[in-house]
Image (cartoon, rainbow, N blue to C red):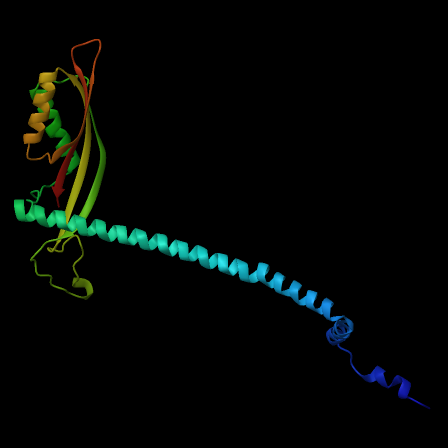
Length: 224
């Protein structure tokens, strides 16, 4: 019995290798121009699918890096300008005096000061006083020696003598008064030691009465 005809049945066949061999045979059967067109198509597909998106992403990242670099340069120049202004101010006027340590709520204390000034000037009705914001700032006391401890005895910001903690309070005041009373209220507030400064003043003339509608934003600092 001749089994040569069935010899190939015992050999395992791999589907992938068969497809590759068929493609190779067809590729070899193509003319040179067809082979050239095939490689041109492969190159174009690779360019538009891989290379061009990669170049576009690289250009986008370069642009973002340039924008960030310009922002960092601008911030650095702004910081240098601020340092220069602060140094000139210190040379001319000295270091600013820190607000005295005060207990209690600075916002409530500021409202009491404003109410007292208005009452002394005869403004007792139509007054609106409200706290519009409080911000805490942390700084470092210059020239103070810092003692470092470890474990349970370590100091935190609350009880560290080298850490300066300030509280900024803004209070909005609205009232109506004659021009001379308004000027007196503003002068009294500016002279009061618990008032840092008046941040904003808005004056509107009342067409029905000889008074001004006034809105003030009074700012105060409290040291804790």
